[in-house]
Every structure is written in structure tokens, then in C-alpha cells.
Length: 175
Image 1 (cartoon, rainbow, N blue to C red):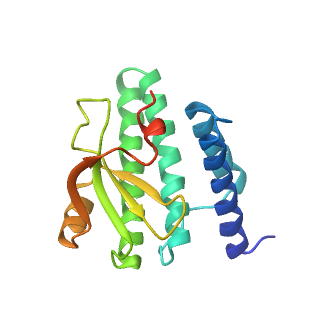
Image 2 (cartoon, helix red, strand yellow; image 1 turned 135 degrees about the vertical axis):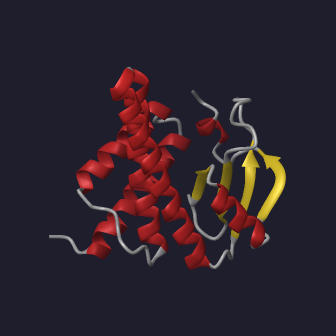
């Protein structure tokens, strides 16, 4: 049985591998999302509590993001009460994802962090989704709409009001 440290290392390696495949065009967005869901299922790891390392935060962010996207898809496919239930689950998982991001920001003490709104094709989402980048860690790119996180980024002088193209623009702007 693998140790917690080995599980985290395996997750990070697999996560980086999937991101590289996406960058290289070996996976499209849908396949990338599916492979991420498969990774979470394969690892059979529960989220960490507390989040006391960046690595645990990365796992939790990833875990909750996968579940949020799954329930968003299910909500889009369902109607009525079932749709509402799926969207409630989605929103809950996005909230948990944001808690993981906030924990990582606190661990980093907002050092080597940049935040900014991202340019999106969706007019509805303009100036609501922002990107947070850990400049000292490869593939540490996060997205949120959480106003508390936004305020904390601004309070710590790491947020630019100038919208920028996302580092992963081809991913975020692909339907």
C-alpha cells in the first residue's frame, strides 16, 4: 500500500502528464476532463483535511474541480428537480475547490502569486472569472469567481485589474 507522500507524488506526476498531453494536442478538452476524472477515481484518494501543503491543496483543488465539472455536465443533461440537485452539488464542489485555493494562497503567504481577470469569449463571464498563477510552480494555474479570494488577492497586492489572456487560453475558451 502506497504512503500518503507516494500517492501525492503519483498524482502530481499523472496530473503533469495529462496537462502535457493537452498542451501537445494529444488530448482535446473533453478527453482531458474525462482523463482527470479517471485519475481521481483510479487513485481512490479522499481530499485532505487540513490542507497544510501546496501538494495537498493541488490534489484537493483537482479533486473538487473534477467533481464540479461532472455535476455541471449532469445538470446540463437533466431537467427539473434532478437538474437543480446536480447544480447544487456542482456549486458545493466549486466552493470546496475555492477553499483549497485559499488554503494554498495562505500557505504561500501570497508570495510568487499573480492574479488577474481573464479574457473570455463569453460576455456573461467577463470580469467574473480570474486566474491565479503560482509563478514558482509549473502548472499551478487556478481559476475562480470567489469574491473572498479576489479581495484577498487585492489586499495582498497581487491582483492586476488589467484583463489578460489566460495562460491556458485554448483550454478555457474552448466550448
